[in-house]
Image (cartoon, rainbow, N blue to C red; front, side, top):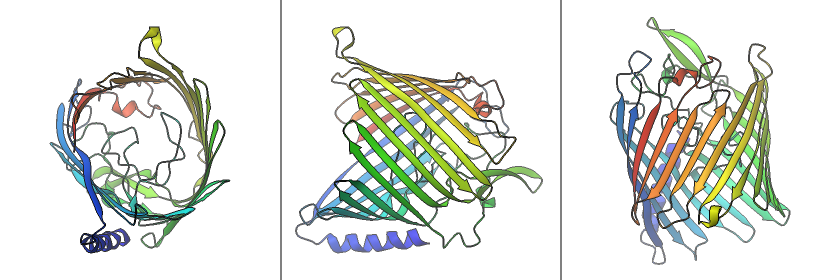
Length: 395
């Protein structure tokens, strides 16, 4: 595969660079352990655990030379999971060479590229594939092979992307909680493209800051990162088969910073072989600084999401309101808490973080699904309320 050849070439380059006299090298990253405790019995056959423990390693290796104008970053990821073989996996999140020119920057290799400004849903974040076995929030991404050229001008930054080597989405296995009633079988994956292994995706993005306004405008052509999950029968067992279409997408993201206000907006238009698709996410965050003459800041977040699959007459418009509050204590332990709830589903999400020591942090996440309507995207997870404890050690 293309990305395997890229990695092999990089490892050879690293061996060559290791003898370079002016080379600067450092190691950072983190090790972590995670415990999930579920408060209800499993809903589906095969889910036989009420708790789950796993361990992860995310070291970061950084090489730098040529007065910092050239560098290589290597970020592998490994998870060992107690129950689910699908969640026990490894990935190269990043392995790329970066060269800085006078008014341009070139990056070649495997990278993670984030686009977007909204809190609860990132519509425009289209480059990397979602690593669904890590979490249901869509924040975890697989590494994507790419060539990225950034042109820096006074009228903004223009990023050009060539994306070889499509990455398939990961899905929970039979024994894992946080899945639907029918397991996704990745061995049954299909593509609309007849020669998908040789297909190369393309993307372009312009970004600029105009006073209090941050703008981003992008175009994308290639494989849709969101597969259609189609029901199939394999050896008399029902499974879901991922089907990836080709797509064209254009999108806009903008954020306006006005005193204590952050106004955020993302919208996309997507054209696939099965039809067209519109979606938008609009909202704000208002921050109360130094509440009651303390060091605590409280951010109030409200976002509204709308999307419509226009080509499918049976699909309903998704109208979801997200409410949240972010508490930042600004103390020596860096304590933070984020609370959020969605309507009409009324599912509750809680995240608490604090530093235990210079190199240790602990976080507690709670997800409580209150979906009663089978049209709610979280309805299949209605018995998967859980509390998750994560302890991290930073290298």
